[in-house]
Structure formats: structure tokens, C-alpha cells
Length: 259
Image (tube, rainbow, N blue to C red):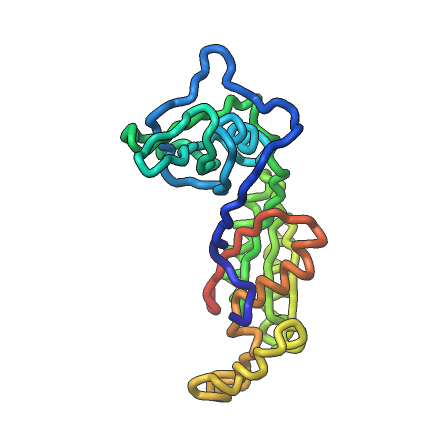
């Protein structure tokens, strides 16, 4: 892929051996490991741990971990030592998949009390609206969204390709609409040349378009290469603004050309 690749990564299985470490946490009085219970799905990570207590400690150290399911290794006869044997440790983002398990599965689960959970990483989101050739009514609608979000203190951005004159005109319409409502809209602008510098293989992609120059710049000569690539545009935003402002999450909205 030429753009920023999205999706989930495969998680490696890691063998963790705890030697000379501080004694891991154990359930408090009144709290017990749930034997023959599986917290199905919602995995945060998967490691191999020397015991349920070690799995418990691993979960306690991870941001966002709320519980775990531990599965003991067994011998060929299906027997396991529930106190000392190695096993699979599945840490969980949620315990909502709780279900009963068969004794032969050698599973136990535990939900961490909130006081035992690792502090969550800071949540610093931003909203990014990707717009192109926005009309006056479309600019007013975008400004209305920014007004609706003003009380949340979440930064509101509009990202626009300004290679062609229409993009620059759209920026002026959006800023005028924002000024009319007294709201702040931050503008991220970029050009075809900036995108090609960041993603040089797009130059080759231009020549592979089904209709060549009939697609870009198009019959009216009003389309840039940057107009047609969405994930790369978000990549430019992340490079230019996301890392500078230390955003942890971007909520991206694509709007129609003639919104």
C-alpha cells in the first residue's frame, strides 16, 4: 500500500519468565479467580506466563487492561497443575464476553478492581473534516458542527487540498461561516506537490489510472492528484499537525464535493 496502512497487527506470543521480581498481586479477600470461565474476545495481548498470578501481574501493568483469561498448559493426558504450570495469558480490554467453559479447557478468569488497573494513557482527540469544493451552504453546515462541539474543547479541523483555486475558495467560505458563528475552525491545507514529496510512488499511480489524464487533472483541469487520495491526505495531517499537537485519536469525516 502506498498510504498509511490501517488495520490490526498480528500479536506475537511472548514467553515471560519472572525471576527476582516483586511478588505479584493476588486477589483481595472476597475476590476469587473464576475457574471454568472464559472472557471470550476483546483481547489486548497474548503472552505465555508461568502462572495465573504472573498473568494477573502482567494485566495490572498494562494500560486499558481490565481483566484476563488464563489457560493452563496440559500434558498428553489433559492434566495440568493449576498452581504452577505455564499457560496462555489473554489480557482483556473488556470482560463483556464472559461465558462458561468446560473443565477440560483448563480456563480461569479474573476482573481487576479499578484500583488495581494501570492508569489510562491521556486521551487527546481531534476532529478532522476532509472537504473539497465546499459550497456556502456546506461551509455553514461544517461551521455548525464546530459550534456543536465547542463545549467539548476538542480541536476541530478542516483539511483541504488547495492545489487548485477551488480549494482555496472553499477555505475562505469555511472561515467566513465559522466567523459568522463565532467558532474556531483550524485549517490544514496541502497541495499535490506536498503529497508527492511525502508519497513519491503516487507519481507512478497517476499513469496507472484507468483513463489517465481524463481522471486527473480531469476534463476541466480542476482535479489534483491530492484530490483522489484520502488516506495519504490523513497521513499529511498526522505529519503536519497530529504529532505536533500530540493527538492520540483522530475522528475523520469525509464530506461530498458539493456539500
